[in-house]
Image (tube, rainbow, N blue to C red; front, side, top):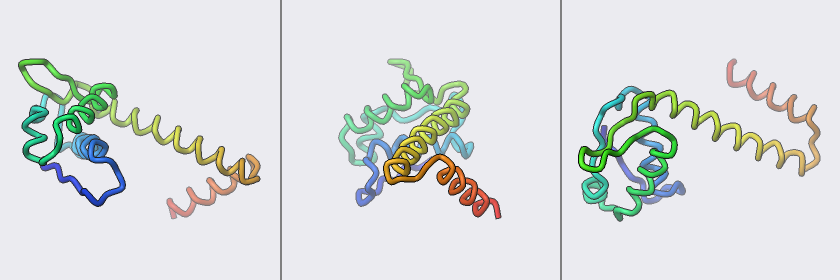
Length: 126
C-alpha cells in the first residue's frame, strides 16, 4: 500500500497518515500481522518530520489499530478492522452530536432535526 500526502489538504499530515492506514485496513490492502515501516523510514520516504509519523502511529495505537514491538517493528493489530469501524462510529456520533447541538442553537427543535435527518437519509438511499 502506498501512502500519499497532500500538502494542500486542510487535513493535518498526521491525520492523512491515520486515515490512509485505516482505509487500507478497511479495503483489505492491510491485514492483521502486516508490518508497517519504521517511523524514521516512513518519515524519510514521505519527507516528513519523524514526530509527525510518531503522532499518527500513537493515534493508531490508541485506537487499537496497530501495535509496536520495540525491536520487531510496528504491525497491524489482530482485530484492527473491527477497531477501525468502532472508531469511525464513535467519531460519527461525536460529529453528529455537535451538528445537532448547532442546529438547536440556531433554533431548530428535535422534531425539525429528526425530520431533516430522515429526509437526508431517504435521499441517500434513493
